[in-house]
Image 1 (cartoon, rainbow, N blue to C red):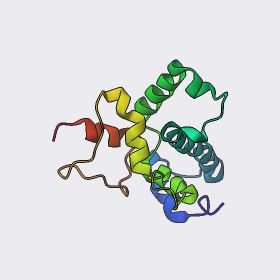
Image 2 (cartoon, one colour; image 1 turned 135 degrees about the horizontal axis):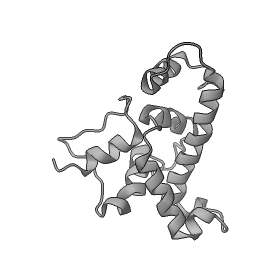
Image 3 (cartoon, rainbow, N blue to C red; image 1 turned 90 degrees about the vertical axis):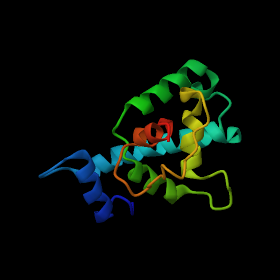
Image 4 (spheres, one colour; image 1 turned 30 degrees about the vertical axis):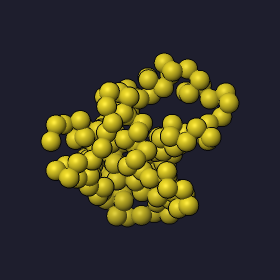
Length: 143
């Protein structure tokens, strides 16, 4: 996979995870790939109901969705830039709803109780090596 061979992505990920020395990057990135694919598809299915399976256990039981939302908001192991890289590989250019920032904001809105919108005083920097939760945190701060 092209992303696994991306040395710039590997270097940035190693800095994010503070990993030094000999490490099995191929195994590590495969794990991140599976996790990232799950997260990205979860965001898409949340926003685009037509993508959901009829028997999807996450969306058929509201408590399951809430658990997943809380897990993602409390887990700082998803670097924003890695999710964006993986998202861009599968982005549907023909669907205006398929915008990563908008999908993330929509997914977490019900947890904070109000719409999450970027403000001019608090711009979103996609290239920052921050965890996903940092995006939600920044948007919850009063400008």
